[in-house]
Image (tube, rainbow, N blue to C red; front, side, top):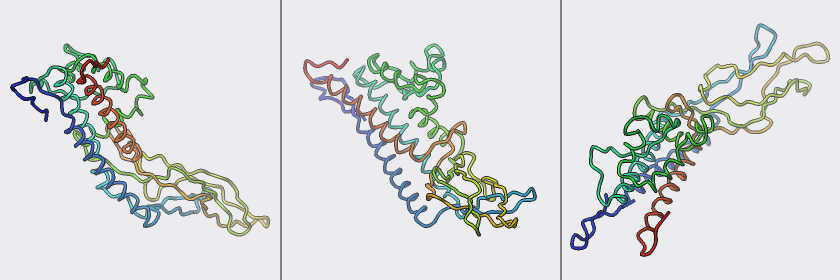
Length: 292
């Protein structure tokens, strides 16, 4: 909440960023717990096993067996983290309106931090969605929020903009459904090797897309059955030439993929936005100082 000044001096309200930081800290605390749970999960064995299976067409299918699925509550945690970070930014806009006007915005204003992938949507309406969200916020602050919009990066790069990822992480949990967690292999070298003579018939890299989540019994790839010098078929087995590195992904709004690493980056990104505005406001309070 904003702190009132001594009424004998002024009736103006001063902005207070404590509520922004409290929500940011709450999101980070939940993220730390989620990262700890993920570390423990992978420390207790790989979640996948690759199994070769002969096919009728003369190939060997390398199928994936899910030894242990990703815990469902990871998805709940991801949604809560997204909501906490989004709430921190919404509180920031409320405090910027107080700083701009010296008073709290009316309850009907429904101020919030806007996040848009389309500039036309951002400026649609009279008043525009931008102006409704930033009711009472001074132009000097609005210009920075405009520059932070995902649409500024273009339609493709904008989808991986941190704020667009935050919108995706938050909206699904608030409006649609719980997040679906998926474990996937994000880095590995996989070499199918013949058992008897050490011949490696081919090389393949194993990079399953985190969405859709890999299914139990899914064929990851197929290789031709290997025949040795005597013309005898020999078994083929998958060998990791480098250990697989597993990742965790969540299905966000509009089926966008939100990676666990995205949530780590979002905490730092939101903290940077709050720091930037709090610094500007503090500078303006100093005698003879005026932030641009």
